[in-house]
Length: 99
Image (cartoon, rainbow, N blue to C red; front, side, top):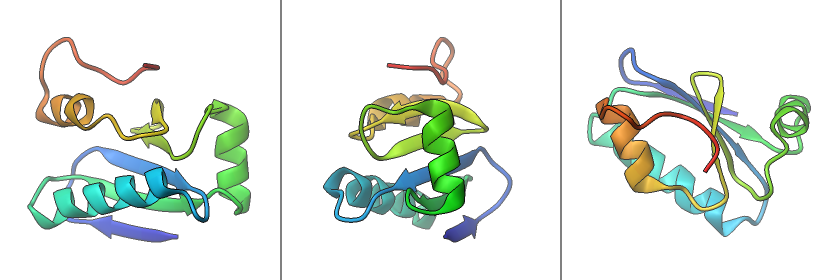
C-alpha cells in the first residue's frame, strides 16, 4: 500500500489488481495529478490484501480498479477523468456516485 499526501484535500482510495491495465493507468493519472499540485490524498490498496477484499466485498465493482472518494464509491473500471476533474474542482452538480 502506498500513501501520498500533498496537502489537505479529498481522500482517494484506489483498489488495484495485479496485471490490470486500467489500474495502472488510473494510478499513473492520479500520481500525475499529485505531481502537478492537485490537493488530494491517495491511498493505493491491493485487491488481494485484507483491506482490498473488504472494500471489494462492500462496493462490489464490476471491474477494477475501484476508486473511492472520501469514503464513497466513485467509479470502477476505466477512470472517468473528466468526472473526477469536475469533482475535484468543485463543479456544481457533479458528485460521487455510480456511473
